Image (cartoon, rainbow, N blue to C red):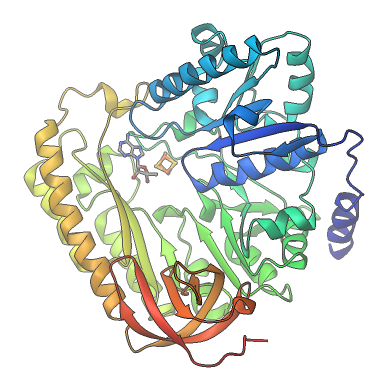
Length: 473
Ligand code: 5AD
Ligand code: SF4
């Protein structure tokens, strides 16, 4: 097992094979969830090996990648409109004798496939979330004039073929990093496109995750968030035919020296095993914060959403999490106005939110996604009703977030400092509960944890005082 990890690190520590000087520039525009943020960094690392430096300026780019998200309403239309603007920029560059290759990646690419090439002539490559490791080859073909769509769910392990970032790249990205441990979704909630764009649930091997994490920590990362569409469904190969659960994986990662904090997101209630709940009491590096989407508080709607659990089961998880770790902060996603949602159903959602008391939440009006079962229902809810319900829910959730923040005033905890603050002499970081915290302090503390007493609370951040100028060892 240990040898596996060593081998992986060694294999990935080969000197960067970048024969070409960094002559070309790539702009990656990423939309949507943390999985896309992570994929964007992996694409950037992959392309840096091909001689592409990152740029934020569109006019400088030889290659523009739109790493798209399909979850929001009219996602594809918004991408076509963005592509329309890029096509004009491309034509202007062509007129000056320069070229700009345009790639559409991510979930819209997966869902639309070749259609993107048909609808927008300026697009050179369409590549799905499971095949972006093939970008260098696709770009070679595009340079020869081909226009290609690769939306296969590749059989090879994408992660094994992707190059690891170098120390400078890791440092530039800060002290907190994502590591994808699981991809895809088998749940088929009746409102959601993800199972169609990200494919079936699959977990990365433990050794690969440990190697990636060790490399990040070695370069200065202190906080790792394990990500996956259904991260708590993680069941990864662990050598000799064994499999490790998410709790076991977290336990193994916690042993990595120099790593201060572990988090995971996003979880589904049905996969919230007691072992994982217990880990919040047993694993000191596991942060007391869980994002656990409930979507609705009505059993009838939860059933229609195909969530496979009721409100009581959710409340029981919350109770057990609080038993394991009394200070745990909870966050959730809500959908209001799902087809057939009555006033009483909506009231049940309000009641569930009141019963839990969330530290933070995301809430959305239901919007039909073509191809999903709920989109075909003929009992869609009126837009004004949806808006009223969303407004009422958001008032409650905002109150809860403010009350949660206010309750931290006077408390002391470790803050992981990430960056300079907005004002001179200030530095900013994150509390164990995912709140932004600002203090007067030295820049040397960035990248480290230090004890802070909270002295003020706003709705989106906290103000604190350093208890000592010293960082934790
Ligand atoms: N309408 C509204 N919200 C949606 N979400 C997913 N699909 C839809 C939809 N069709 C929300 C869910 C999910 C979050 C990422 O996006 O709350 O948890
Ligand atoms: Fe979508 Fe449901 Fe899967 Fe989450 S669990 S990605 S909401 S289908």
